[in-house]
Image (tube, rainbow, N blue to C red; front, side, top):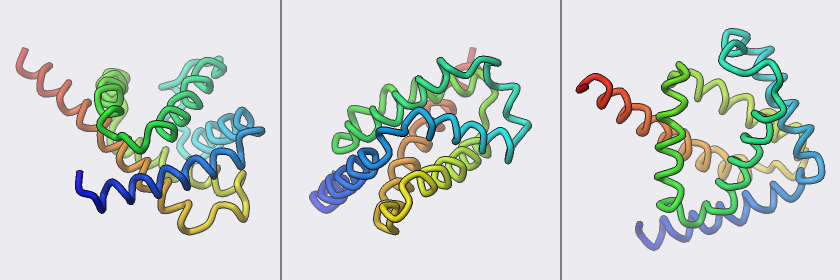
Length: 150
């Protein structure tokens, strides 16, 4: 990682942390709202999820917090994200699903953060999500190649 990349990751990490603090007291509602939005806009993904969403909502919130709190050291996140991507692949998650999640997540964050969701904050979230989703898709691709080779 170059010094410039490292400093941009640090700047993004600070923006991500600050924006998460803005919505922290409403995090559970934000996550529930995200899933409502996702299932409304992309009803075909609903069967991929359990009927009772409580545990799933906790997992997503935990994943977001982990991404934000560890974003300054993205290489430490890579193995977990790759494994998560392989697991999602086994559930039928495809690249277009990551795009759907990105749009719904950003829209929900924008709604809950209000004026605090500046273009700089949005850019940091886009970069963080792109990193996480891209790494997860790499894990999915690795799983697919291993499955085909077996």
